[in-house]
Image (cartoon, rainbow, N blue to C red; front, top):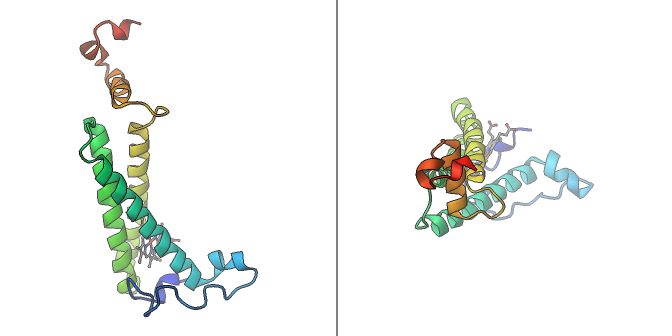
Amino acid sequence: MRAGLMYNTFPLMNGHLVPPGLDAFQPLWLNAFENPVAVQFIHRCLALTTLAVVAGLWLGWRRAALLPPQRLALNALAAMTLLQVSLGIATLLYHVPVALGTLHQGGAVLLLSAVLAMRHWSSGGGARVGDVGATWCRELKLAELVTPGRSRT
Ligand code: HEM
């Protein structure tokens, strides 16, 4: 499709916030898969939405009482999102050199890993930090140190 070889400007797409030709194909839904202009526009929108959501998450949680793995996952998620968006913009501005394109694809895998780590360390159906901490300690077989007698139940 080579959607990255057109509109090689950022943040605007050749001077347009919303580029012309987004709905060139019929039926309309086909544009999301076959129209390079629409594919690039959607890619940008999803990326910037992801950046905004992760920034909000990081700002909201950075002062919270988190366990070390939770803080690590939160920081890794924020750092990877920032890096991935920067790599994407560089890939676009330099007309998709193989090295940058490959780094950007690898970055997507690392970002997904950070999301999964974040999900793992904050899971438990609304578990409180203490609950997650207990799970963590149990996994490390440290429950006895935290709550004497707990590991025997
Ligand atoms: C959270 C942010 C982002 C994620 C997760 C992401 C993910 C990806 C993935 C998985 C691909 C490979 C698609 C394929 O090969 O079929 C890709 C390609 C690409 N992305 Fe992103 N992207 C992000 C942000 C951006 C941004 C902000 C831009 C530019 C404004 C951008 C520009 C590109 C370009 C030009 C390609 C084509 C590179 C190639 O063909 O190897 N990306 N992106």
